[in-house]
Image 1 (spheres, rainbow, N blue to C red):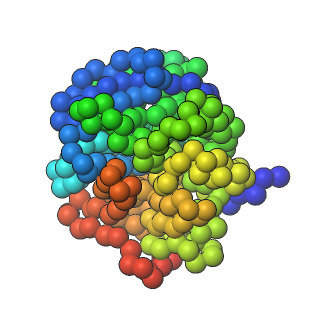
Image 2: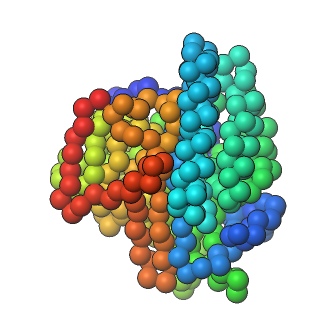
Image 3: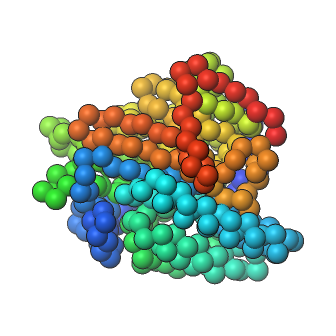
Amino acid sequence: MPETTCSRREFLATGTTVLAGTALLGHISTAVASSSGTSMIAANSSEIRLLQFTDLHFFAGISHEPEISEIQRQQTFDDMRRLVDLTRPDLLAVTGDFWHENPDGRGLEFLHFSVEKVADLGIPWVFTWGNHDHLDDYDKGHKALAQARHSLYGGTSKNGGHYVTRIKDRSDRILFELFCLNTEERGVGEGIKNFLRQMLSQEQSDQKRPMRLGAFHIPLRQYRDVWENGNAFGVKGEEICFEEEDGSALPLLREAGIQAVICGHDHTNDYSGFAEGIELIYGRASGYNGYGNQTLKKGAKLYRIDPATAALHWESYLPDGTRWHPGPTERRSIAP
């Protein structure tokens, strides 16, 4: 029996290959297929500002508390606008649990609503699937995500939602790559590993790698380990729910040159720590229809990426403008 601390999540799709899209930061164009098999945007600055929203959970609670769900849904979107205004990002990453389930077959309706809300922010964005992003027809879901305004989504049913967004400068030099991966229902699994192996097999031996980050929904097993061994700093409000991930993915992520990974899933954890040279970072849960509102304030996480030095700095932002990054010895367990 796989070791895990939770079993509250369920999921979606699988796969391996990639499509592509293009956009200029500040000048958005429509996503299109590319022979390179990746999504691309061109950066106009030496610092890339990536804002992560996670666990937005639009429509959670609609079945039994529709009026409260509507109020919290609007509060979530209002806060998203404030956070974009505060952080002025170049790129948005929505790392799963975008909407909530598929009651009465309404998942696609929920997807379209959620997509329009993010598109209204006017910033290029990527999406990784969460375990609550349920649909009857995933082909339609992939198509809607890829065709949405400002979207850089590169997933299909064939590739299962694994793709890479490349950020280039105006001379076509790759500055940064964001590996957008689908953790499926059981956490990081064979679909992601096969995708990484495929990407590695396509690299030239003398190829110079750009700075690389990974983005997905369910954390790795090592998120638990770095907290328990005292190598993580921030706040922990719940057990780490890595589902059935067995810890074997981290070496492959390291081999692929990924220097940090960002995730969501556990709404009341906001910490980071290093394992095998990779920084493991929790995003700040963003949606009021998700659990944990009374334990940890909702917000987003801003990553400032310097491709020239491969430096990464992050801060959690709250809608009131509060910014937070844990001090070098700050470790707090918070009660639900």
